[in-house]
Amino acid sequence: MKTPAPPLRTGSKKGRAAAFCNLPMLLLIGAIQFLVIYSPAIDRYMVMVTKGKPGFPSLLLDGRRGFKLVEEESIPESRVRCDFADPRSDVCELEGAIRIRGSTSEVFVVAGAGADGLLAANVTGLAPGMNATSWTIQPYTRKGEVRVMRGITTLTVRVVSPGDAPPCTVRHDVPAVVYSNGGYCGNYYHDFNDNIIPLFVTTRHLGGEVQLLVAQKQAWWFHKYREIVDGLTNYDAVDLDGAGEVRCFRKATLGLRSLKDLSIDPRRAPRNLSMVDFKRFLMWRYALPREHAIRTDEEEAAGAGGGHRRPRLLLVTRRSRRRFVNVPEIVALAEEVGFDVTTSDLMSASAKNNNKAGAGVGDEGHSRMADASKLVNSFDVMVAVHGSGLTNLVFLPMNAVVVQVVPLGRMESLAMDEYGVPPRDMNMRYIQYNITAEESTLSEVYPRAHPVLLDPMPIHEQSWSLVNDVYLGKQDVRLDVRRFRPVLLKAIQLLR
Ligand SMILES: *[C@@H]1O[C@H](CO)[C@@H](O)[C@H](O)[C@H]1NC(C)=O
Ligand SMILES: *[C@@H]1O[C@H](CO)[C@@H](O)[C@H](O)[C@H]1NC(C)=O
Ligand SMILES: *[C@@H]1O[C@H](CO)[C@@H](O)[C@H](O)[C@H]1NC(C)=O
Ligand SMILES: CC(=O)N[C@H]1CO[C@H](CO)[C@@H](O)[C@@H]1O
Image (cartoon, rainbow, N blue to C red; front, top):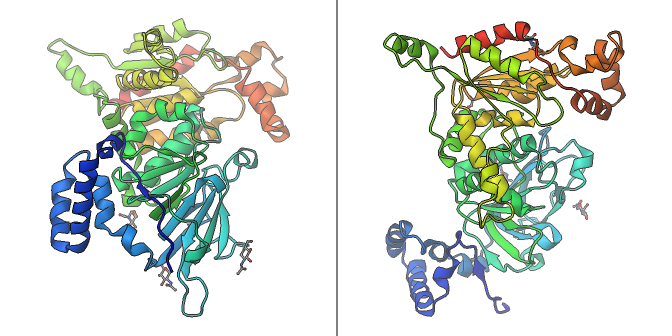
C-alpha cells in the first residue's frame, strides 16, 4: 500500500514564482501536464512552444519527465563516481534518485535491490576505509588544511532502499551542485581561487541549468559576486543549512573541482574549459570593453601621422603592509619610459557610490567589483606587490603584462605559483621582480647582517606565522628605480 504523497513543490527559476500564484494558470498547467505526460507527440511540441517563453517552463518540464508519477514505481539505476585522490578537493558525482536533506547534511542515493539482494548502486572511487553504503565528504577545495576544513560541513552520503529515504518535499528538474561558501571566504584571492574558478569549472558546461546548494552560505558574498553567480546558474542558490527541506534530484555533484592555483587545467576540465574561457566569461558578465591590450608597434606606426597613444600602466598601491614607499619616484620612472600612469588601491574606486541614497548594506562590495573590473580592464600593464590585490589581473585584457613585485623572505616561488602561472594561462605576459634586501624597509629595521635579511630559510622552518608576521606583515618596498627600469622597458616590448 502506498501512503498518500505529501504536497510537493518544484524548484523554481529566479524571481518567477509569482507566475504560478494564480488558480486558472495552475489548472491550465495541470491540463497541459496531463497531455504532455501521456502524449509523446504533444510532449515535443510543448517543449518547443514553452522553451522561449519566460515565466512558464520549470513546472512543465517537471511534468514532461513524469517525475512525480513514475518515481514511486521505478527507481532509476544509481551510479556514484567519487574522486578522493585529488590533492585539492573531493568530488562525488551522483546519478539516480538523489535526495538531499540539508538540516542533517545527509545525501541519500535511493537504490533498488540488486540480484544478490544487496543495495545496487554502482559506486567507484571511494577513499580507503569507506564502504559503498555510507561515506562522508567535505565540499570545499582546501582539503589538506585541517584548521580551515574544521569549519566546513561534512556531508554523509547513504545508499538506501526506497523505504529508508525521507520523502521529497521539493523536486528539481536540473542537477544540483553542493559546496561550501565557508573557509577563506572574504579573502579576494581565495574567493576566486577556492570558490569562483572551481564553481566555473564545475558548472559552466551546464549552461545555467543547475541548482546550487550552498553550505555556510553568506548572503553578502552572493551579492558581491552576483554577476558571476548569475552567469553560472538560472536559479537562486539555496542555503543548505536553511529550512528543513528534502530536495530531490536526478543528478548531483558534491564538491567543486579545483584544478590549479588561480587557474584551470583544461585537460581535466569539462569541455576542456580554459582560463581564456574564464576571462571571456568575466568580460561578458562585467561588460568589459577591452579584449586585447594595446599593441605598441601599431601605435607607433599610427604615431607617424599623429594620435600616438601611450600604453596605460596601473600601479597598485596598498593601504597598509607591503606598500610602495616611493610612489612618486616610480610614477616618474614609468612616465619617462613611456607609460600613461595611474595609481589606485582598487578599493576606494567606488567610494563615491557609497553615499548614494538607497544603497543597501552589502552594496559596497558589489559596486566595488563593477568599478574595479572596469578600471583594471582599461590598462595594459599592472604593477603590484605580492598580495591579493593582484587577483584583479583576471580583468586585464589579453596580452596585457602583469608585473609582480616580490618582497624579501623566500617567497619567490610561492609568488610564482600564485600569480605567475595564471596570467600566462590567460594569454597575458608575466614578469616577476624579486626585490633585494636594500629595497626592503626591513633593512631599516634590522642590521645588515641580521638573519632576517640574509637568510629567511630558518624562519620558514620555524613557523609560517612568523614568516607572515615578519615578511608579509612588517615589510614595505622602496623600489630601486634604476634596477626596475629594465622591467618596464621589457613590459613595453612585450606589448608589441
Ligand atoms: C559501473 O559504472 C561504470 C562507469 O560508470 C561502468 O563502466 C561499469 O560497468 C559499472 N559497473 C556495474 C557493475 O554496473
Ligand atoms: C559501512 O560503513 C558504515 C559507517 O561506517 C557502517 O555503519 C556499515 O556497517 C558499513 N557497511 C558495510 C557493508 O561494511
Ligand atoms: C624571481 O624568483 C623566481 C622564483 O625563484 C625566479 O623564477 C625568477 O627568475 C626570479 N626573477 C628574477 C628577475 O630573478
Ligand atoms: C572533453 C574533451 O574535449 N576532452 C579533451 C581535453 O583535452 C585532452 C587532452 O588535451 C583530451 O584527451 C580530452 O579528450
